Image 1 (spheres, helix red, strand yellow):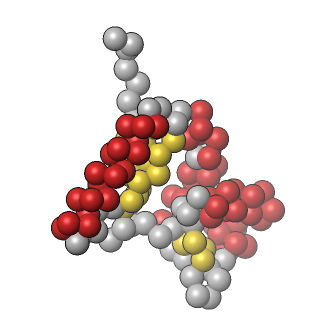
Image 2 (cartoon, one colour; image 1 turned 90 degrees about the vertical axis):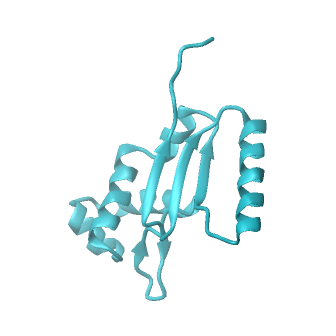
Length: 120
């Protein structure tokens, strides 16, 4: 079971420190510790994960491995606009293709984690 955690981490140094610590812990335990995708801001996150693209991930999780046209029919979307969204998600590793060329989400679970807090 692969898990992806998506975070907003505006402090790049802190994000790198956290990633380093997670790597060392996983190396020492020799156990899968999940994967992380970090963004420096909410704006950066939402440039990639638009509502339409989140729906693509959700649809693939629901219907399983699909060809582009099959997915477009399932989602009732134009294949060319869907292709733009699929390509953007593939560039970041959120969608992959299987040996038969079908699209799929390589993660069993995608977890988002971010806070909005009052300034100190």
